[in-house]
Image 1: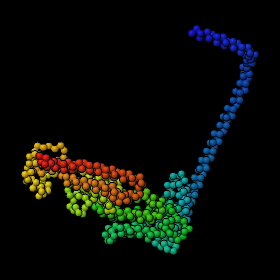
Image 2: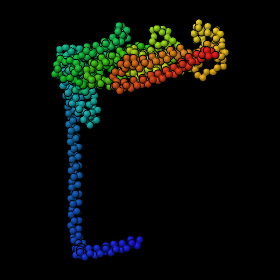
Image 3: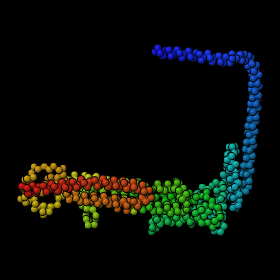
Image 4: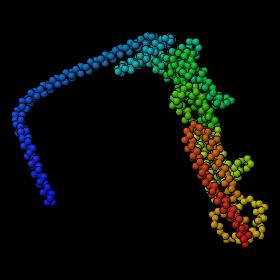
Length: 563
């Protein structure tokens, strides 16, 4: 500490000496620093007064400019309002003049809002001219803000629109009935006018009610369905034939998919008579006249009807021509309603009962042999029933693509349920009446050796949990599964596993999922292999039990030989 204190003292003296030397070197600057500041306050005071004056003048000018700007903006707003009123007034005048002009063209009494009397048939040129005027008139009315004026002219607008619409309807129907010669040009003009006045939906509705409905009512009905030798398929084929006969002229003008007489003629693409007129009317007629085809009470009839109607839907989509048109059609309400009318959950529930119930019943008596062993590859009825149910899930007469996930789940459920039945099979008990009595068995029961074996085995307890057949009287007792039953079950399980992982998957199930990606098909294969592995794991258990049965049966005779 003493050394540190001495060092600090030395360092303090060095600092003091350095400070004195610095002051001595810059002494003149230190003296001038205070001298130069003399009179600075007076200089600042002289500058302050002019600056305050300038700031006041700038504030006055800014205020005057703001007042001038406010006045100018107000006058601009007034001018804009006057201009708007002027344009509104001109618009009202234009609407009134146009209304009067259209009424003169149509031969109506100007300003009348009463029902129009019968007038002279309008020519095509006049219809197109009136349509153009009405389209412009509707635009002007949409820009008009005078609600009172608009309400006053609405009756007149309605009369003009109805009169034009009536003329358009009659000309359109006449053009469709006489599409040859100049009818096609008249038809094109009518469609163009409908598009001009924004009444496309009215044209489609007109074709639907006046052209398609009468024809479809004759084709889609109970009488036609009963009389047609092909049934529903024949009826739907007749429905498709109505497209070229009744909609051909319209489709040539509105659908680029159809051949047209002039390749340079412009297609009026705003119309869609197939998706918005034809198909909705077909669905309506089916609902009204033959709605029984949607009933799932009889699964076979329902399946045939569903497949037939799906084929009809695909044939109809081919009429649309392009992928985009098909995609747009599938998003329509009519298409969604058509597909939703089929009660697929009820159909699957009925099929589930048909397929699963026999499997469940056969598993309850899993050791029952098949009736015709020569004509069946399996030895037990339960195995044959399970295989038949799985094959039927994917058969042409049962499987529906929309229910593929449910049939796949049912297949895995059948495999799992059969595996559970196999696992519990060794615990099943069989009554004495179920044992086939052969000559050897009867002789063995009555022999002296057998009597001795009974005495030797009396009181003997087996270590195995499964007891085997012993040639002794069992008038009241029961015993567990016989070795021959277990052997048949082992053979069936082994064969069923090979069939499922081989032929069933590759030849029966895989063709149903051709559109899936390889990774997805591999996932399906993996889930099926998992079920097969679960089923195959029972083979070792069955093998052990069979060996125990045979060992227990041979044990008494071996003891007698030893004795």
